[in-house]
Image (cartoon, rainbow, N blue to C red; front, side, top):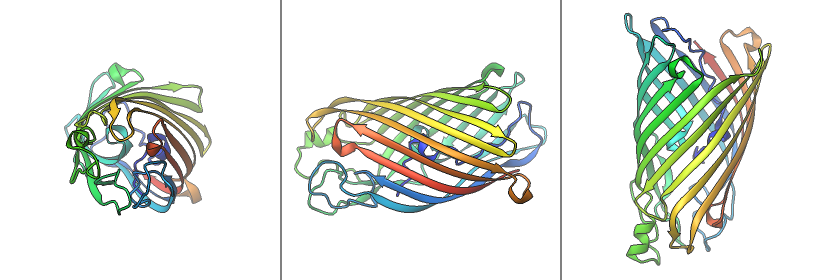
Length: 325
């Protein structure tokens, strides 16, 4: 199974380091975590199941998979510099999947932090060369998203955070619609193209032990095929409550996708709505292990499309351990 994560499905897997507003001490710091779990996905785009289909409807089978996933956010500051280089993994965002990012963060006098990072497009995710091929074994290909991100955290010392991104989606082989559709229709189904991403978030203190993080996201998916090009607007939130060494986190997500043109295979314009929720329990310093956390979580998401072929259901249950240094 791919980690084609809707953000909330895999949220809470990385426990953020407690970055200070002031410039951190020189040296190496960050956090790492390792998670193992069970995932179930029902989707026509899941290349681990439904390789051969006889009709263009809802995915006939779901796929159960055992997952092992590392996450990290690592940084190093050189002596005499007011910034740091970083290397991190992330989920969702512009890539709408698991991705890695490397770049530079600079700390400003007002307590804000400005960073620029590159997304190299690894690891690739699996996709079908022709998702609409019937009565034959569909063939896998690699899909990558690469680009650049701008991060502006604690804008002017406030609780607002801004992300801006530009990227490009590429497929090793693109054969959408080759089975039974004209050259014009095939051109309308091309998935490669440019991506523009923006998100604006804010953190709220709801008391000494409770906080709320909310984020508004926008993605302009300017795919080469006009039937695949779309705009996505979504909101997500994460509510955190601490009781001593116990931390409870509840997250939710809603995203609306509006497509530009009529789909040549289904003769209607696609319209998707994504819902998701997750719950995590974090126990700090188990067995008196300093700077360590145990993380248990469950997540669910569902993509409801007006075209049954694109409906998706995802469930994830995982256990993990994190280390902050």
